[in-house]
Amino acid sequence: MNLILAFESSCDDTSVAILDTNYKVLSNLISGQPEHLEFGGVLPELASRLHMKNIMQLCQLSLQQAGISLRDISAVAVSINPGLIGSLIVGLSFAKSLAWTLKIPLITVNHLLSHIFANYIDHPDLTPPYLALVVSGGHTEMVHFQSDTEFEVIGKTLDDAAGETFDKAAKLLGLGFPGGPVIDKLATSGDSRFVKLPQPLPRKDNFNFSYSGLKTAIRNYIEDQDEACIRHNIHDIAASIQAAIVNPLITKTIRKARALGISKILLAGGVAANTALRRGMYTQASKHGIEVYYPSLSLCMDNAAMVAAAAIPKYKAGLYSPLSVNANSLKGTKLL
Image 1 (spheres, rainbow, N blue to C red):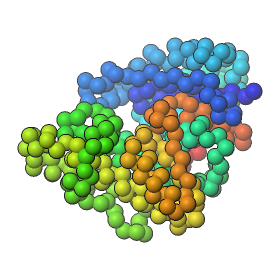
Image 2 (image 1 turned 60 degrees about the horizontal axis):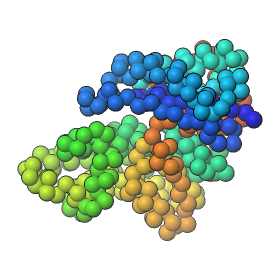
Image 3 (image 1 turned 180 degrees about the vertical axis):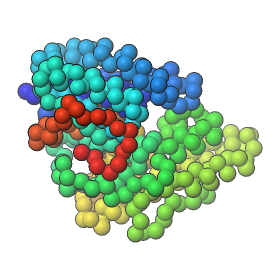
């Protein structure tokens, strides 16, 4: 049995996981960093220091939970980009040390690709072609997969990300950080038609996304209302904001899947946990005979199991990384 030991440290969650090459999870541990909450966002230097503090112990606990030792590991996988450079370096340095010491392959993985491959953990028989929509706090991309290692980014945000828009709206409403889960919960009992908000890039031949204008419209609306009005209508306001963010994701992804003749759509990233996105994509796609896949809620957030899952096709294909490889914070368009 071949086992992948994986590390995720691209932002403020330290995670270590062990998977076999059939996508079975033997362990998947995550250590969050609540220390950032008082600052209303992630402090990069603090995140790096906490990764250094947590990663060794988390690795030991992950091995214990899986009931194995380091001698049983076949390869080490780690997120290399995009993310906070200091955080990425902590995970990569630890992974390099293990790979060198154990004399086993090192496999570096793009963080966005990892989110997509989280779907394989719940659906190990999943095969391309498919269209993947990656939606998170910092990224919004549509990716066409021809095979597990051949793909093309065919749509992306031109400015701000969908998840960032959720967070900004929640902050303006005084709902705290992160904003997506709070708005999702409030929106369940709200009327999405309450506030008329602009639809970003509505042209049918445009498969990119843009949220900067929507963020401005949300801010202008909130600043024009008194506090009592916002409190009284908070559920309707949340539902309206959520619909304005989510509806373009659903419409554009299904339209592109139909244009390409693709019968499978994968959701990925933190925003893939959003109830309206999951439900809306499934409902609308099923009208056109398109299957929709999404990870379990726990796998939508940053975790090392998804890193291991993304490393499995590269392990099978012998696509290893040299120990001289460096982390980088930029995403670019090359996911391998």
